[in-house]
Image (cartoon, rainbow, N blue to C red; front, side, top):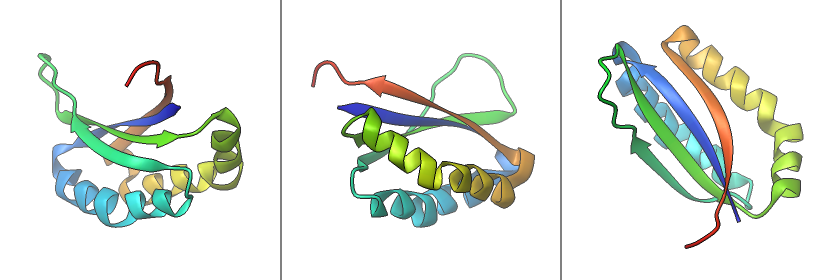
Length: 102
């Protein structure tokens, strides 16, 4: 089992719009690709003073093969959609984690 994690750095002025977009558009879009499941959003706690807030959005997905298929079909659209919606007010990067114990 893998965890597909996207970390978002969200400017304070875009925070409300980002939250609405992520919950009403992005998560439902990801869940249409059935292998993604169990979405969760967490605020990243940091001791550093920043002008942005960091959030982690995670989904479970079966394996690298399934993730590769999604990436080929939808990866670019995902990146373009976020950039079009928020420009530089929201930046993000993705990581993949392997779940070893649950």
